[in-house]
Image 1: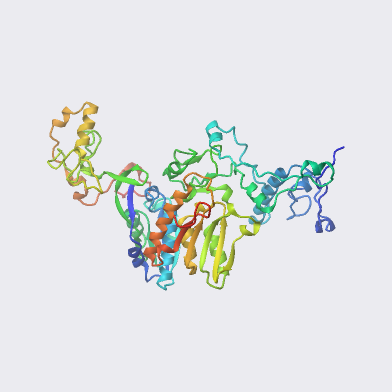
Image 2: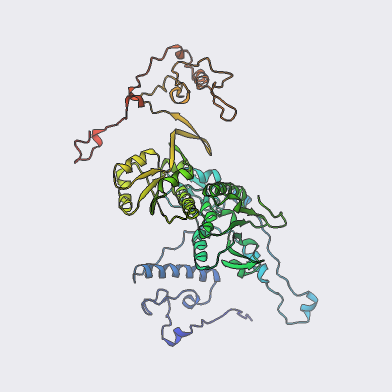
Length: 322
Length: 232
C-alpha cells in the first residue's frame, strides 16, 4: 500500500465561491476570467515542488507583462535551457559543503514507537542547509549594450567564466555565482541572477527614509550566519542606547562603493560591513577591502571621515577592522 | 585608449557648488575601460557629491546618466534634452567629450570631472602607460614598433642620449621607474634583424602635423552624408 503524504487538493478559498476555478490548463486565466491567473499544482495536479516553483516564476512573468502592457498577455519564454555537462575542472572547483544531518529517533525507540522517525530541521539548521544551494545557472549575466569589453571581469573571475570578444560572454556552466565580477564592472553591465531584485542602495534608502529618528549605525551583514528568518529582513533595532539599521545580504563581500556611502546621505554616523565567518569565494574579501579603502578616502575628502566605515569579520576569525 | 584620472573631489564640487541640479554624465568608451568615467564611476562620483553637499548644508540634486560615447553627435543628442533641465553638466568623459558637449549648448556649462592624461595601453590591471603621442607622422616602422616620440622624455629621434644608465632613463626614480626607450628600441631591432638600419639618421620630423602645428582636423569626404557637402 502506498500512502501519499502530500496535499491532494488545492484549497482555492474565495476563488471557489466566485466560480473562478481554472479548468484544465487554465494557467493564463483566459478561459477563466481576464486578470485571473493560476499556476502550479492547481493547474497541473500533484507534481514536484521544483516544477511548481518554476511554474510560479513563469506565471509571475506573465502577470508582470499583463500589468505593464495593460492587459496584453505574453507568455515568457521557457528558461535559459539546460546546463551542459559541467567541465571537469569546474566540478573540481566547486566548494563542497557537507549537509546538515537530520536528527532521527534512536533505533531502540523506533522499534517500539509510531513517533515520526525524523525530527526535521530546526530553523537555524534549515537556513544553513539552504545556503548549500550552488545557485546553478543563476550567476553572472552581461548586458551587452553596456559592456565595454574592458576585461575587468576576466581579471577578477576566479573560475575563468568570462570570455571577451566584442563584449563579455559569461559561460554559465562555469559560473559559480560568486558575484565577484559585478561590483568591479566599470560599466555596471553585469547582473547576478541569484541577487536579482536586491538593489542594496535602494533598500538602504527605503528603510532610512521611513525611519524618522536618526540611525547611529548601519550594518550590511552577510546573511549566511543568520539563525532565523527574522534576521533576513531589513530592520532598525535599538541596542545599548544606540540605533542600528541592519541589511542582511547574500554576500556582504559584494557591497559596492555606492552601497557603503549611501547611509551617510541619511545622516548615519557609521557604516559597518559584517562578513560571514567563512567566505565561500576566493578573493571576495580582498576585493571588498579594496573598495572599502577607496570609500574611506572619498569619505575623508567629503569631510565625513573614512574611519566611520569599517569591515568586520565575526568570531571565531576574530572581530575587528581589516 | 584615452586615459584619465579623477579630479580631486573638492575641485569638482567647487564647479557646481552654486547649482541646484547637476547632471553627472559618464562615457561608455575609453574612460569606462580605464575605470574613471563609466557608469560605475558616474554613480560613485554622484554619491560622493551628494554626501559633500549634505556636509556643506547645500541642496543640490545630482542626476546620473551614461552614454555610449560623448564624442559622436548621435550619442550626445539625447543628452541635450536632459541638459535643458539642469544648471550644469559634470562630464566624466575625456576632454573631447567636454568640448563636444560644450559646443552644442552654450547655456549650460559642462565641467570636466576628470583630468585627461594620454593615449596608452593597459600594461597590467590597474596600470596604464603612454604609448602614442598622436604626432601625425608615424615613424614606428623605423624604430621596431616602439615610439621614441611618446616614450622618450626628450622625444629624441636618434637615441639613446647620454642620460641612459643600465637600461634606465635619467628621469627614472625609485617610485616611477622608467626604462630608456632607446635601449628597448635597440634590443627590439636586434631581435627583428633590423639593428643595422638604426645606423641611419632619422631626419628631423615635420612637427606641423603634431600639436605644434595647431589644432588638427581629419576629413574623409567620401564619408560625408548627402546633405553635408560643405563639411570640409
